[in-house]
Image (cartoon, rainbow, N blue to C red; front, side, top):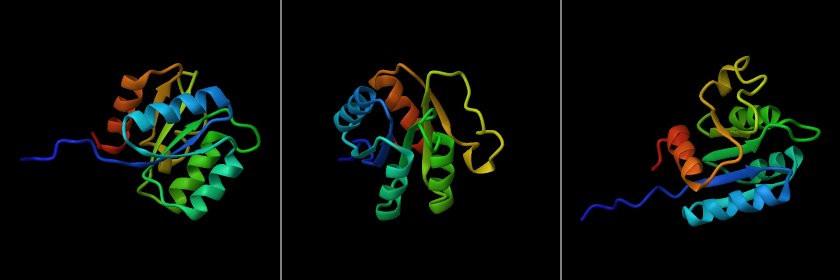
Length: 127
């Protein structure tokens, strides 16, 4: 018998809106991923210093450090880390200027579990 269950990923969610962060984490738990959360870019960087992640899902419009800044720091630390930008905009300013972020996936807000799951597969290849 072949194991067809989805790959369990270690995912960091960075979102300053508590309700969106909680909802996203709940969806990821329902998808059986190991999740970590941060409300600020600085908190995210602290977590990334202590733990290895497979995927970063970040809001773009964070205060202090932007989601792009957090993503750059994350992939420079771990070039294998996949990135999803969750945003209400149709593009991410600064993404195209950085080669490290060209493979990042854009997840338009608001999103549901199916859209989140599809973005995870697109960014990581894990289904």
